Amino acid sequence: MAAALSKGLSQLPWRPVFLVRESGILRLKRLGLLDLEYLETDLEFLSPRELVLIPQLLRKARARLWVSTTFSSVISFLMPCPWLIAIHDLNHLKWGGFTQKLYYRNILRPFARRARRVLTVSDFSRRELTGWLKLPRDAIALARNAVDEAGVAEFSENEILGGLRQVGLEKERYFFLLTNPKPHKNSDLLIRAWREWADWEVERGNDPIPLAVSFPAPLDGAVKGVKYLGGLRSRDAAILMKSAHTLVFPSLYEGFGLPPVEAIANGTPVCVSGIPPHREGMEKVDPACIRWVTEPGSQAAWVAALDELARKPLKRPDHAESKRLLSRYTQAQLGESWIAEITQALTSKPALR
Image 1 (cartoon, rainbow, N blue to C red):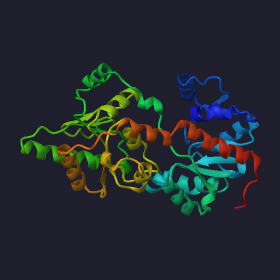
Image 2 (cartoon, rainbow, N blue to C red):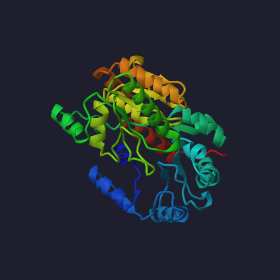
Image 3 (tube, rainbow, N blue to C red):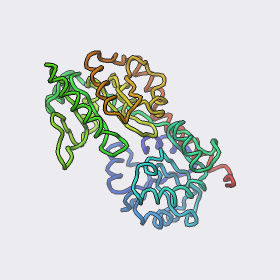
């Protein structure tokens, strides 16, 4: 987000100051953004200390506006200035534990209702937030997620084959699951479906297409045949995505769902749950590049999808398809959306709610 905002913010008549932790400063260095003005803090994300210390830091910076690019919130009456807040989705309210749900209802909701503006990443999320926050639709702005063009880099054939050799995979000869093991990501069910399909393939005398996943093996035991790759560097993930037979993405819930969009941008077809955010994000993609699973909670549906993909691979998105998608979800457009909202918040009076 800092990369998307920095250029536009430098052109405004107001002075941007970023609140960052030490790890954030290291990231700014990697992005070449250390010339930004920032206040360093040891606050962990969503630490209870945020409730008091963020207002104190804002007073120190003499801030005219607080821009929360996550759902991080504080107690409204402690705030020394107005604020904007981004809420990507209601994931934690639907799938979180007791503490997370309590935070959403008792901290986030009243804070968001008093914001100058709420921003979100999709029309789907805007509809959800409109109902949950009981705000008019025009009080919630869209700032669609962006595809990081660094993740769509070109690689030489030697780089690709070398990267795949390190993890024991062959080009376009594996399914790739780029996600995490959180319940709403539905990865456990997809892995069980792959195992059922792989056993079926062996019974039929075929060599099953491997499944590579982007998180470590669970403590209670790995599933036979699954390649657990653990945490991947951005470069390695890009090579694996670009070279996969198909990206499989079985989420039950998303605010946007970026990996399938990134896969299409990388020239890789996708097998994805048919939930509204995914259909919205890929509404202009060639249908021949997508296999929709309309019952994502059904293991049998994923077994059938994997079997179909093994027999008849999807069309690989061409360069024109990739370019068209990249032009829709750019870092520049994301930055412009935020700059427009920041400008409006600094120059307009708050709405009465």
